[in-house]
Image (cartoon, rainbow, N blue to C red; front, top):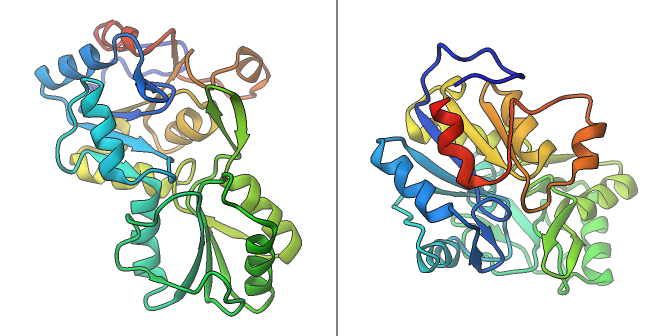
Length: 268
């Protein structure tokens, strides 16, 4: 596989990382060619990891949604921002009381000690996905935690997410607001930070430079993976915008119209 942005023709592909929303799915509906492409990758014996910044839906429901859409998901293949965040907190903040701001359940934060949502003395503020359940009171409680010495962890670094109704503010936008108000820098666990990509890579047993990352977000999916040595593939679906690509000082290794074109790229 070769392309204008990468000299990797001599390298074989030993695994594929796939973003979900905007690459395989559009809300609850599969994108054309998604199931067929995943099945074909499996027939070739390539390890697959589904990597997603979605924090409003538990991993079990994400997997169930993919399966319902005809996309097989096997044990250990789904890597979520929440699961990576939980691993980071268990390692770096064991026993810390964590104030979690997330528009969704916290079922995937296994082993994390949750603080009372009104407690301004929590040890760590964790910002997940933004949504209608976020309130001014919650943000002010989080701010006071930070001003009282708490650390700040963002489940992911995406400031917006794409919905059928248009773009919405996502967790990183709120995390940046808290950074600005408190002077505390956030540690990002999910994409575009290395933690998620490296966790997914390690679970495949392949080095990053022999993996492909397919995403619809140029910064969070594609360029972030390329910075770690992976082959980045940008799809023109989901949140893709041509003007974003045109303005970017860095280019993806490859651009394809949709996930349906991935096999042709690998075989080129």
